[in-house]
Length: 455
Image (tube, rainbow, N blue to C red; front, side, top):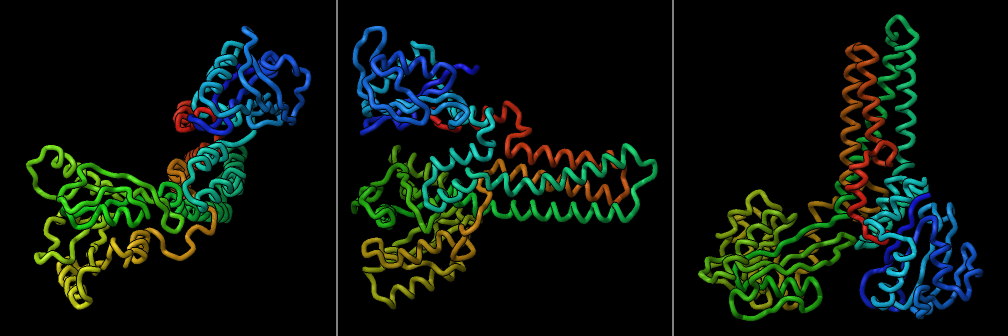
C-alpha cells in the first residue's frame, strides 16, 4: 500500500472554505481519530458534517464537512478523504499538522495527480491538462484543457499508434519468416501507409502555433521616450489606473506587468521606462531593463508623441527584425490633417503605416488590439478545434515525424527491414511519451514539479 499524503487543496490565504486533502492507505483511520463522536458515519461518496479535534489533546479544531472517496473510485485511485473547514490559515494548518502526526506526510508538487497516473486513472496528457485547466486564463484555454483532460490527445494519437504498430508487425514478420526481400507491391503499400501517418502527425503539429498562443499568450512591451504616453496607454488597455501618470519625464523607472485578454488570447502587458540617456542611476537601470524586454517581447509597441515637432523614429533602430507596431499617441490634441501628415512622415521612415491612438479618449484602441494579434491569428475563429498547446507534446510529435520520414526513405532505398524498423520503433516510443506509456522517471519528475502541491 502507498503511504498517505496530505496537502492543502485550496489556495493559501483566508477564504470562506478551505479544503485539506489526504490520499493513501490510512486516510480512514486518520479521519476517524479526528472525529470520534461520528467515526462510524463515514460512508463512501457521502459528506458528513461533524466536529473535528486533535486526538492527543481532545481540543476542538473546527466544524468540518468530511467527504470520503473510496478507491479505486477516486481521483488518485486510492482512498481519499477531504476535510472542508473554515478557510482560516490557522485552522487549516492545525488540520494538516494533526494529519502529519497521525501518519500522513506532506505531498510533493503534483503528487495526487502522479498517483492518478500510476493507478491508471488518467494518462500523462490528461494529467497535464489538469494543470493547464487550473492555470487557464481565458474561456478558450479552459475549453482546450477540458477536451484534453477528457482524453482528446489519446483519441487523436491512438489510431496513429495502432497503424504504426500494424506496420511494425508486418516488417517484423518479414524479418523473421521471409528469406527473400519484400516484394515491391508490399513496399509501396507500406510506404503509402507511412506517408499517411506522417501527414496525420504533421497536421497535429501544425496546430501548435495557435495552441501555444492560446495557452501561453503574448508578451507585449510598450516602449518609447519619456512622456509619450506609455503609462496612459497601459492604463487605457487595462481599463484601470494601474500606472502612475504625470507630466514629469521619467516617472516610470521600472517595469509594470499586468495581464489582460484580447479575443481569448492571454496578454502579458509590460510598461517600460522611457528610452533616453540619463545620469540618474535608478532611471538608467530602468532603461537598460527596457532594452532587455524589447528583445524578449513577442510584440513591441513603439510609442511616439504626435504633438512632437521633431517627430521621428530615431532611437528605435534596435527594433529591426522585431514584430513592431508603430503608434502615434495623443491624437486628441491635433486636427485630422496634422495627424495624417505625421502618419505619412513616419510611414516613409518605417515603410509601415503607424496607428493613430489617443490613450486619453480611447480612440484607436480597437485597431491596436487587432494589430497585436494579427501576426499570430489568421482568421476570426482561431480556437474552434482541438489543438496541441504543450511544447513537450509538439516536440515529441515533430521528432516522431522525422523518424517516420527516415524509415520511408530507407524503405524506398530497399534497406533491410531491421534498419527500417529502428525509426518506426523510435516513433512509437516518442508518441508513447506523450501519454506516459514510455516516459522516464526524470521526465515525470520535471513535469510534476510544475504542479501545485494540492493537485
